[in-house]
View (cartoon, one colour):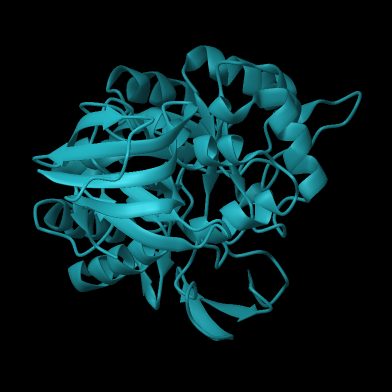
Length: 378
């Protein structure tokens, strides 16, 4: 058994003070608030204790990318993410050939069956290839396909069970059949890289769309006479959304408006990070394209944003600096993304029976320590 004493704990939607947390076999066995420091406890009496962060949309970091199809690279990402408070993640693919995506899935499968050095891979997010070329963002246009069940199955092969979420454009021919198929298989269909109208978006929610990739980016905007995808997402409680809180992809005021409309239980803070995350300014690759990173922004040669170089602890500090309540930020980093990807029964909360994935923060919201399955990794 491992014991830690935390001065302030964000646990299942509420704050606990001076809490003893006991861990057995990687699970939280006991939580006792209003306690005193015991001789056997690790002392975090001056710290904030949060569930480990969950990043459900990340392409790469520290010089590596999911599409590299490389176990060592995924493990490097795992170690890097842990240093920034992330304990679980979904490696995210690009719009690419079926062969390339399948190879990446195979490498993720290998990682999930071995001991990773840091954050645990929980599955895969497929971003494309069933998107709209007119909203491709930094995706490769000549690899975009029309949606079909047959293409999806061929792309995933024997690793279909790894797929947690897939981003697609519901207005494309064949999308309805694929969305209904995915829903029946327990895979979350995600709207993104789309030129759908408001009504097309609403129809797709009826078919089974339940989440939105990087809200506001690469989708039809809100207009007072044409609500677009953004209007449909703000209005409909069935659908959760992602925000990239680097304060570049979305203006701080818009983040606050979204939070007011949706609430923290319907927003997941993701990084959408690419391989330049954690590295110095320079030229990097994303899906075979040159990406130029400087001033903490990643862009293609034409200025298109190409993911981010964000980490989840930086997102936390960014939003705290905008006056957003800490409990709302932590909810968006932990319980909400865990629930969206079907892992809410074991990840994203601090309560008895849950995985002991814990991020310890200073008062300045810097990561002091990280525990994964009860083992201290940082």
